[in-house]
Length: 385
Ligand SMILES: [Zn+2]
Picture 1 (tube, helix red, strand yellow):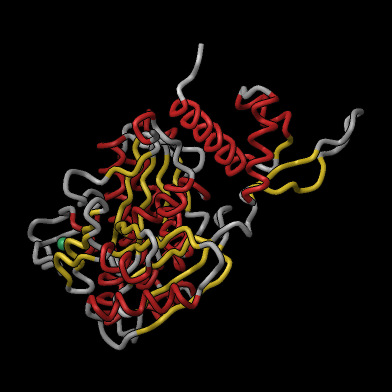
Picture 2 (picture 1 turned 30 degrees about the horizontal axis):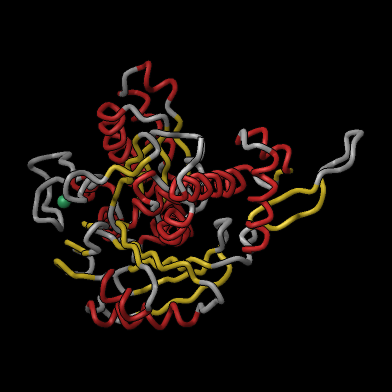
């Protein structure tokens, strides 16, 4: 049977995506291993391998251990092939990193502000940072930002920490830099990074919870980020813990964030006579009862929030990240106790509670992965000719 030209091209680009994804996950591999795992005919693989080597996306890296026969040449992704730029927009700082196609950060740049910057300031700062990280082949720029983000329109819908509402980011940036641009909520970007390169590699259903200035959750269901209908899924920090509690920065009362974020820790620090969260951490580590109690309470409330998510979504794992994980020794046990004490036993027994593997770099790697996800996407039938 004669295949149409369009179909041939589709099959070829699907096979290409199959092989580079296999190398991303399991490389380096020999041609025989690739052929076994993909079931590609050796002749088709030979052609494809030649093309990938010529293109430079794949390199030959040494030889496998000889087990009798001739040692096989191993193939892996070429870290020098390209860079994806990952950007994290914070309240008074923008971090940038150039990430290679194996997910490794290769260079960094950052800029700080005295106060939350306006959208035009952020746009021109990002353009400068991307220029600083220049490389022969830049695949695109991924930006993560706290708040409600709509990746399909490229708009930042609402970022309380910056005081932004309905700010178009993707299109103006893409135009200025002549590069494709993606934007995403920061915790979703972290969850994506953990899914691709970190603690989430082995899970299809997990929740990434971040603890820092606020509390966020990136929900991965069936291997994909769950954003909800309007991009607002995962606002764990604003679930109600106590309807009569103190007012939260979102104007509601008794949100989890009031009991378990840096807001809570600064309030506790000043209540107990410490001048900063850092002093509170040090005191707790030195054995201060009040200090330890403050972190135990925070852990308990975080555990309550996590438990509610576990009961609602039945994930395989909770991955904990965010800036305040630097003091996780003071509250991790309390989280675990609370989750396991309350969640249904059949779920609680199998649930894994683990820290992020990528740490705070996960935000930058995740932002760059927005770009890489497009590069590694397996084309669907309607996408080609
Ligand atoms: Zn709130």
